[in-house]
Amino acid sequence: MIADIIKVTLPAVIAFIIGILITPIVSDYLYSKKMWKKKAGKIAPDGRDTPIFNELHKDREVSTPRMGGIIIWASALIATAGIWFTSIFLPSDLSVKLSYLSRNQTWLPIFTLIVGAVIGLIDDYLEIRGSKSYFAGGLSLKFRLLIVSLVGLIAGSWFYFKLDVSALGLPGGLFLVLGPFLIPFFAAVMLAVYSGGVIDGLDGLSGGIFAAIYSAYAGIAFYQQQIDLAAFCLVIVGGILAFLWFNIPPARFYMTETGIMALTLTLSVVAFTTDNLAGGYGILVLPIIAMPLVLTTSSVILQLASKKLRNGKKIFLVAPIHHHFEAKGWPSYKVTMRFWIIGIVFALLGLILALIG
Image (tube, rainbow, N blue to C red; front, top):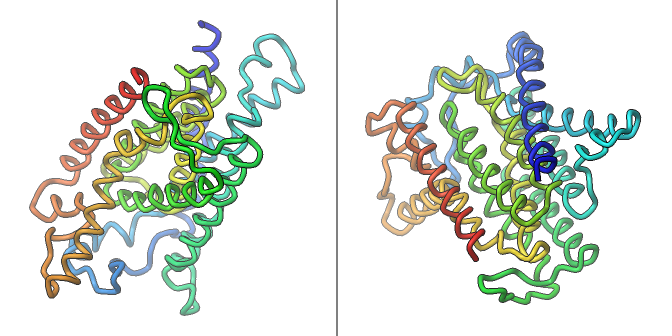
């Protein structure tokens, strides 16, 4: 037990230290190259302007670099690779025990982390540097959704064909058999989780939320004796905490797409890995553990539906919902901290439900 606890927690500490050490290098580069948006503001998903949001964020977006998510996935991957290389080239009982690379637990999450990081990095770069009209503003939403769907289909196929998973776990030892429909369902879940990435809008908000979510799944995985997956979840948490050290108000940089896409795609895989594959129901508790993402996405959907069905009338002053509270006069740090509290409470609730089922 003690050895497993060390295996799960030590990588998080290593990733945090690596993240703190590489941040000055990354930060200096982002500032020296002026890696921020050249024009403040954004366009809503329905193609309309967002004057309230633009007024709230007119100064910060054109002076704070994007791509801060590099800190998260780079520190997690460097820590993972370092531990693995040590186990190969300096083998000992300790170094071999600490390695958490395994085909049925961590290969796929690492794959999605890398794919999401790279695609997101390209999107961030094009949003900053893209000069041609079809690259202005980064990769189109349709293209990003296509990529997420494709990754979801690949991951679902891995589970169905390689890991022989064809059902979802339910409480009481029951199952919901999907058969080959598990593959498109996997893609649908990944799209839904990715949509929650719009929570990345205030200093420190997304970092705190994702730290709570991944910590909860680390607890579930540890309970299921998926020690490698638990270690991987916490190594991501270590990277997030290093990022968060510099992202709390006033943010030194923003996470943006390279962090959001990496974290959301990987979260989907983690949820499925803690489901029927391990005798649990990680998918059923996903909306609870990730409740802040659900609330954020729902607020956008409700806002768009209201404007379309009620002749432009809005439910919120501005969506996503955290910007609504900001527009009502709440300081951004108050919105962030209260969302952190909500995120921690629901992460704990989901963890409890997963353990007692």
